[in-house]
Image (tube, rainbow, N blue to C red; front, side):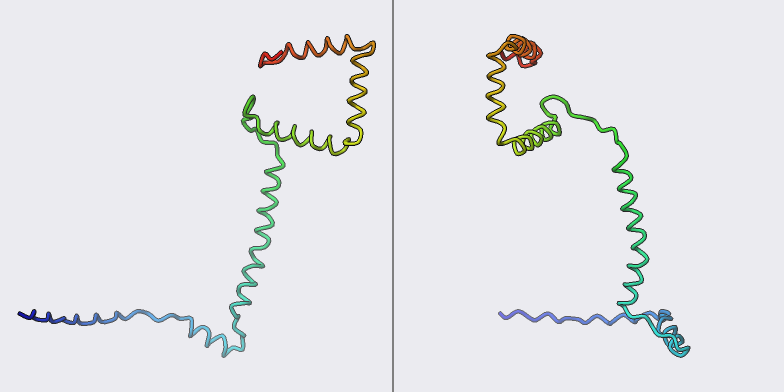
Amino acid sequence: MAKAKKSKARKPKAKKSKTKKSKKPARRAAAASRGQAKKTKAKKSKARKARKAPRKAAKRKAKANKSAAPRKKKQIMGEGDYQASRSFLKDEADFVKRHSKEIPAMGKDAEAALEGPEGGALRAAEEEARSHNKAGDQ
């Protein structure tokens, strides 16, 4: 048997409620009749940007002043002191760049100093520095 088609009942359209019309067209017409030129979108956006520019500059100045002021930060010490590690590695790389030609001569001077009369004092200073080592390597 064939199924009977269901009829689709159409719902009556709801009547639109009467609302107040915007007064913008009337204002524009009044302004045009007085001889005033209406602003285009481009002019409006330029005016908005001009008003916002001093505010943005003031915010940037305030940020700069805040960053310049010393802040108390919780420093990470010991194994996790990443800032100290970064600055050490940067300083070490800068030293090598600046003195790359002089480094072999510095090594020979240090070797000569250890072999010379001040060698005993240098070895004693090295032992003292090792005694302060936290890791206990010797």
